[in-house]
Image (cartoon, one colour):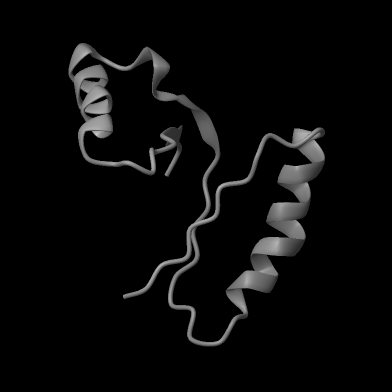
Length: 76
């Protein structure tokens, strides 16, 4: 399976973004040939308030991911 993942920045008007995404963009994307599944969610926050275990895992990223990482918590 191949996945395309997109992470949008915070829009100026979140209500307009959500409406356009749900009513226009998602239906267009679902019509792409060979797309088996289309999902989207809303980012709820960042990993700043993670548990001590989550913070330890995040701190370890610098030990191997020279390109860095952006973590987001999203609804599924």
